Length: 344
Image 1 (cartoon, helix red, strand yellow):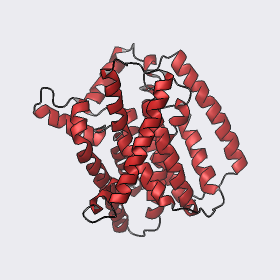
Image 2 (tube, helix red, strand yellow; image 1 turned 180 degrees about the vertical axis):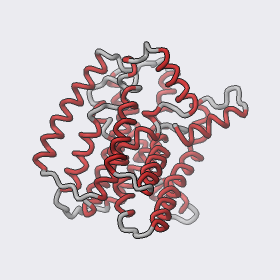
Image 3 (cartoon, helix red, strand yellow; image 1 turned 90 degrees about the vertical axis):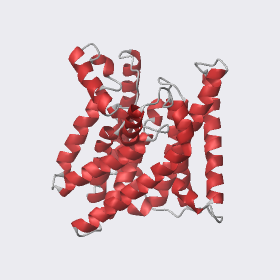
């Protein structure tokens, strides 16, 4: 798997496009389950690469330095986009309305546990999830236990996402969940949902798992079929308001990752590192672009875009995001603009 880094760079670019699809389409649209593969796979890839490097380090101090380096990279990336997009974020989140010291607490909570600029929650969720799994591993907690913890937490995330209406009539559940979200935020858009996928990435980095490709294809096929069955049921019978977490996503994502990782390494004739940078910039900027376009549409009286308008929004968001990628990549090579490298 370590020899297929260029293929993972290509995969990350495709996943970034899927993320644009998530935020430019409506819940219930047919491609949503496919688009939802993106975030879990991003978690798995990030975790896999981190723990793969950890495996080469012999002492606890070296592994701790590796964690600090990872945290620094994530925080610098987050801080770059947080500052760049802050004026729009203030306007979009309406943090300027009745501003008081409590708003600073809201901003801090959003920074660490939720989203500031649109879709930013993944960055801190990845960092916190990796840190939690790293700490558990340092305490000699077995991978099987970490995986079990991740499964339980992820099932709870599914329960309050696609399956929320099952328990929404239970006052004690609603009260407990409201207390949690008041302190943190919705767990399916925060670090709790990352722990399972981080654990999967860690296991794949440390263990030489090599199931046959035939078995992986069969499991992937049935998991995708069942994913769409789950999608249909939750949309039509449970009337899911959020569609962030599906029970079948971990199985499908693990199969996809292993199929790509186990494939024969092939020479690719272009520098995939550029695609890696593109995927990061697209992820960080696309949500703000889409939000801005949505606001302009609402000003024009378009509250619920049609399917054609939704597709146009998807294309526009990708085009503007890629244009920004190209602008940053060109400028960062020039004098006085080297700081733009922090964008990716």
